Image (cartoon, rainbow, N blue to C red; front, top):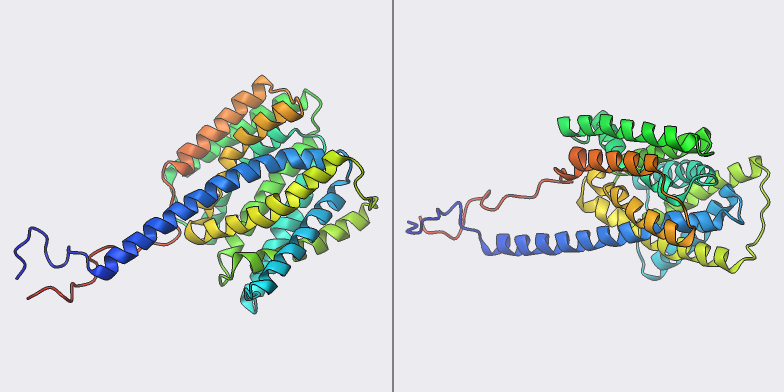
Length: 329
């Protein structure tokens, strides 16, 4: 018999204690990766703006992801990470074509006339877009907070559109960024429906697939395939290749492995903070009242609709859910 206030069911075994410790370490690593993604991703918007000063949008994205894909393939081969095969290969290709190809084609094209801060604010609606798409795909359950947050987010985007169009920002550029956010959100949902592989090899294949689409778009647009001349362009491109692409997206798939799709997309909420601060310092970008008010609505709606109650990727086994085999009868 058990004479403690805890029953044999409630008493954690040695394996359960180790599992709890492993889960805690995993949570800490995931949060660290999430924080790194926020810093890298928020800076990406500013780096893209600098690269667009000299490089055409589709060609600039091609350079970025082509070199990053080669780096990741080299890492995967030297470290003997298995490359995606079968359904995993199909999933990586679709993820790359939609996320790196279509998503960044719209993003790079739209950011030619949109500041880094404004682009980051529009992308801040990605968690809610991801949640709605996850709902349609049956990956997550319906939550009223997400619905209300989505409505408020649409109001915030409308405020930004109204204020930005009047200040000379093309409406098509803003719409392109919204479509880009949709593509990135959908790619996140799709990749979770396929078998998981190592994030380095998965991103290598995905970026290669995205580059194929970007090259086609660049050829159709008759862009000039020139080599950067300015030092600022090389610095921005180097940052985007090494940190913004190679490291950033590997960390993102690591987070996505431990969190749900909508939870992993919460990174976009904090991107504007980094992008607006850096943009104001480096680009001397003005912050209009409509951007501040509309961006505040979007950030508030995303927090209320998603961050305040983030859904886990997978339910962890509860302690005591299995009988205590070592307890005396």
